[in-house]
Length: 99
Image (cartoon, rainbow, N blue to C red):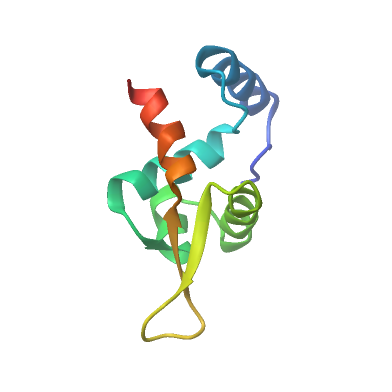
């Protein structure tokens, strides 16, 4: 599964942008919503919840991080794992969708 995998995804992304005025692709919005709901998650857990491959999740999280919508923190007991959380800017986007 790829983030911008189909024409339907592109259409959905454009409709969402027009509806809420946010230029964030649907897959990224799903990750932000999961983080808002669950708090801190690992990329592995995000992949489980979205039924996505690790490489897909890594790409989504990298784009969200470069946009300042998520942050990565070191896992307290496993140096190979990062905890991912929505930043205030990321939470604002989710809040705008549910208001």
